[in-house]
Structure formats: structure tokens, C-alpha cells
Amino acid sequence: MERKIRVVMAKLGLDIHWRGVYLVSQFLKDSGMDVIYLGNKFPEDIVEAAVDEDADIIGLSTLGGAHMSLGPKVVQLLKDKGIEHIKVFMGGVMAPKDALLLEQEHGVEKVYLPDTPMQVIVDGIKATVALQDTVA
Image (tube, rainbow, N blue to C red):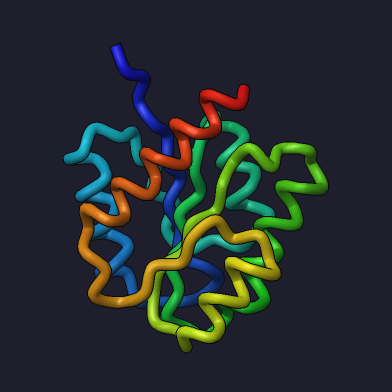
């Protein structure tokens, strides 16, 4: 039997745009994942919740412009605690160049921009967790 993937989902900082993260959270649940939705949180609270919930993935949603500061901070806090096996995925509205920087220079596993099909997000999470499970 395949184990359930545990995903902690949060809005970064004070961003009030909740519809996208809610829809993605629901789709992940419908795809068989355990999803813990935190609402609006700052990096320290997100990482603490991911540890408490034994998460495989942290999903961050951003539309408020704090993605280049708060997203990398989540990744850094995971590194500082020695728990880089918890991978960070982000989604939201941002410049494509910012998405590339987050992935290539700031340790975010994958950034999904608007209009990404939900199945692509599910498949990306499943592939990442499957790879982590084979390494562990």
C-alpha cells in the first residue's frame, strides 16, 4: 500500500489572496494526500508546523510580492534545522524570472505559475516524494 503524502500548505506572510491555495489544497486532498492548511503564516511558523505534522512537502502560495524574501527564508530555516528532506513548492503570481531564481538559486523545489494544470502539481509532488523515499 502506498503511503499518504503529507503536505503543509500556507499563504506567505500577510497575503490575503486565498482562492488559489484553497483550490490546490482541495485538489491535493482529492488526489489522496493529507493536507494541512495553515492559512497566513510567516516562515518560522510554517517550518514549525511542517515538523509537527511530519510533512513531506511545504506548499507556499504567494500573490503579495514577498516570494523572493519569505520563500527562501523557509528553505533556509529547513536547512538550519537539518531537515532539507522537506521540499518546498511555491505557486502564485510572479515574474517567470523570479520563479527561475527561486528554483535555481534559493532551493525551492518547483514554482508553479498561474494556469499550471492541477495534475502537473500533483505529479510533481508525487515524483519528488517518490525520489526522496528511494534515497532515504
